[in-house]
Length: 125
Image (cartoon, rainbow, N blue to C red; front, side, top):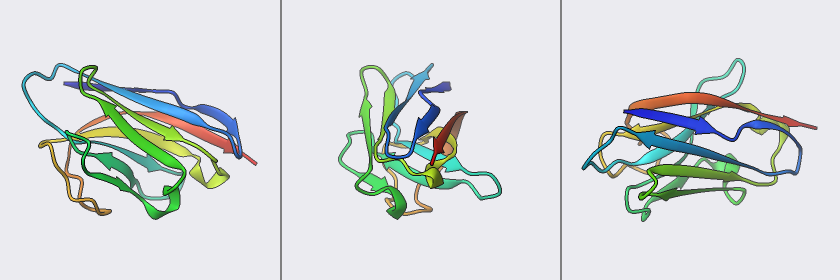
């Protein structure tokens, strides 16, 4: 099983980016998907998550109202629409999948089973 992230880049403050992460190799399983980020000198943090059916979502407080997570199970892809970007959103963003279809919507509630590679998001001021 692999997760392939894309969509990072350089954007000015106030701009938007959409990250995508496609899963391959999974068959007949359900899993939650999430996005984490790690800024230079900081610990990796759980940014957003979505359950298999989409009924449960989570956002870290700093991105609420600006980021939207969604998924397309037919394409086995999760998206992160990032709007009103700020310089403090600059980080390497990682997608991840859980071992089950559900997760607890809190900062430590996503049990990562598989990490994708990171994609760099740089927001200039």
